[in-house]
Length: 97
Image 1 (tube, rainbow, N blue to C red):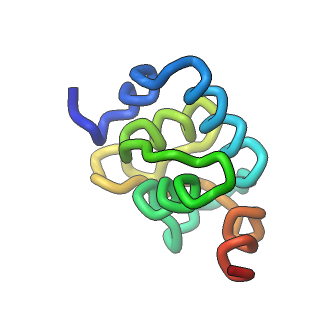
Image 2 (tube, rainbow, N blue to C red):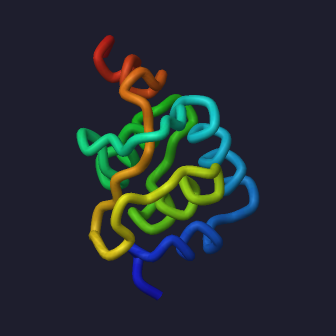
């Protein structure tokens, strides 16, 4: 399976799936429009640098975002753009580092 495919999320352990999905649900907010300033690739690095973060593939991050109800602008793109708010806690935390 391709490490960029969202099914990679299901290859994580149950605890890893829970931790990643919990981070997405806590630190990223959904909006109606798409935010092209942040892609799946960049956001997976925000997760990795978070307090309980760990390495995940781009695909695993995409799967977690889908699992948490985010929409994708273009599923044919390598790095996905989601309907994520610029005001999300994850982006504010990055600015303060």
